[in-house]
Image 1: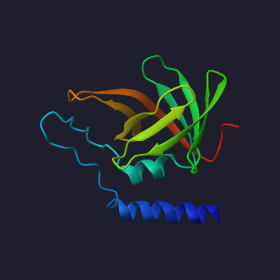
Image 2: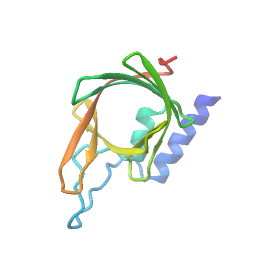
Image 3: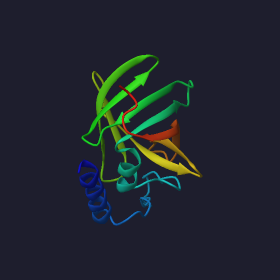
Image 4: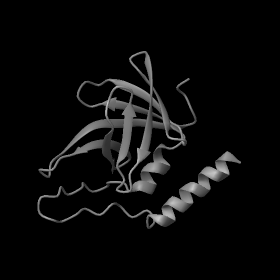
Length: 143
C-alpha cells in the first residue's frame, strides 16, 4: 500500500512539473547556465526517494552511505559515524540536505552518461562537482 501511494505521489509530481524534461537554463545575463544533464525536481525525487545511495566526496575520496526516506528524513553513515538529517527537493530541481548544527545546502544533480553527480552552482557561470554517486539501492541499508 505504501509503495502504491509513493508511486502515485511520484506520478503526480511528474505531471505537475511538466514531465521529465530537463530543467531549463536561464539565459539572463548574470545567471549561471546549468550543465547539460541537469535533472528536474521529479527526476531528482524519483532517483533518491526510498534509496540508499553510496557517494564519494570528490575532494578527498570519502565514501558515504545515505538513506533518503520518502518522508523527508535521511540517515547517513560516514567514516563509521552515523548522523541524521532531513532532505527535500526544491521546485527548481535542487536537492537540499540539512544536518544538525549545519544550515541547509541545496545542489543540482547532473546525469553524465550513466553516472550521477552533485554540483555547486556558482553565480559566475562555473560549477564545481563535489560528489559522485556510485550506487542506488532500494530500501534502507543504513541501520
